[in-house]
Image 1 (cartoon, rainbow, N blue to C red):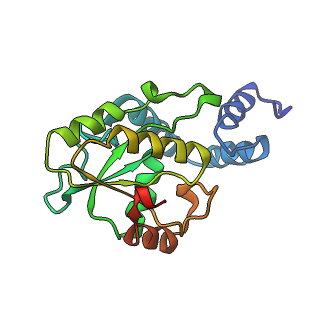
Image 2: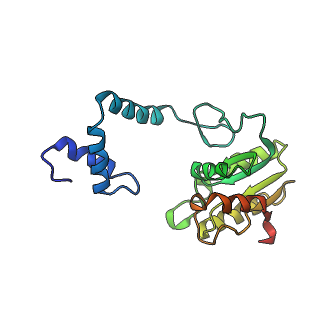
Image 3: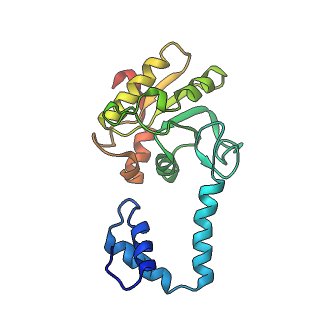
Length: 203
């Protein structure tokens, strides 16, 4: 707690400090900032968080977060539907989109295989990926997972799973350093890694 004269302030600081990367001091600054705002502005802020949690959806095609049943990427007529980029989470979708180098579709797994954390293949959306490929029309799968042991394990699992299907499997060129999280790669490096992708079996 902040040892402040207000229990309400303490409670608000405590809730903010639960957010990743937010310590007690930063939480206090954020709460005090909100206190300087008008009641209407704070209500808008609070309502936007409630609306987000209450109304956010998962795209029925790619598993990305969306305002509608089908996300704006999957529903866009300008995207290349023959190429699907497999990523861990929404953060990686945003990172790849920011490069402006990829014009295909995505498939969001929802995590990486990590036995140490109790996450196995059944916890991730591999079935959705298989269904999309078997439905036809997909010619290339790009494995765009982080260059970490968990990412490599997941890449290999997908490669084995898709081995008998008529689809080319590629992965990012190693412009992304080994051990790096994809979301932290700069846009130029990530963009070049996508453009210079290589066949997975060559890695």
